[in-house]
Image (tube, rainbow over the protein chains, first blue to last red):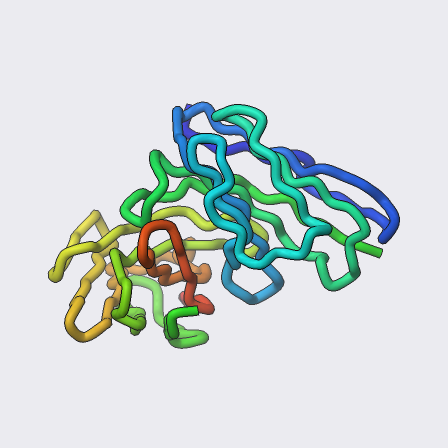
Amino acid sequence: DTEVTQTPKHLVMGMTNKKSLKCEQHMGHRAMYWYKQKAKKPPELMFVYSYEKLSINESVPSRFSPECPNSSLLNLHLHALQPEDSALYLCASSQEKGTKNEQFFGPGTRLTVL
Amino acid sequence: GQNIDQPTEMTATEGAIVQINCTYQTSGFNGLFWYQQHAGEAPTFLSYNVLDGLEEKGRFSSFLSRSKGYSYLLLKELQMKDSASYLCAGGYNFNKFYFGSGTKLNVKP
C-alpha cells in the first residue's frame, strides 16, 4: 500500500460547525504533515508530526487543532472557521522527519466555509 | 518562504523539450524537490536533488547547483498529459519545506 488516503473529499461547513479531516497511511511512515493550499498558490505547511508528536506548528490559528492518534492516522479538527479558511487541505507522509525524505501526498479535502 | 522563485507560466509544443528554472535561498538549505500537480489533484513527486549535478529519470531530469541556489527541471518529448503545474520545493533545516508558487506548463499540439 503506497498511498495516503484522506476523508472526506469535499466538506462544506458553517462558521459555527465542528468538523474533522482524516488522513491515513500504511507505509510505515513516521512523519505526517498537514498543508493548506489556496487556489493557484503553492501548498503551505501547517503542522508536522514526528513519531506521533507535534514537532512543528507554523503559527496556525487555534481554530485548527491537529491530532495524531497513532502512527497511521492524522486528524485535523476544525472549529469556528472563517470563510477565508476555504482551501484544499493536503495531508502528506514521509519515512522520517527531515527534509531528505520524499513526501507522499493524499488527494486532499476541499473545504468550503460558508 | 525562503524566496523560492520560478516562472509563473510556460508554453511548449508536444514533442519538444522544456526547462523550468527555480532559484532559492541557500541559507539552511538541505535539498530540492520537484513535484507535478494537475488541477484539483495532489502534488506527485518527480525528483529530489541534494548534490550538485543532473539526475535523470526517464523523460524528466533535474539539475542542482548548491553554490548558485539554482535548479531546473527538464522535460523531454513533451506529451499533452504533461500539462500541469510544476512545483519546486526546498527542504530547510531539519523539517521545513517551502514550495515555490509553481509553474503552469501548457503543452500545445
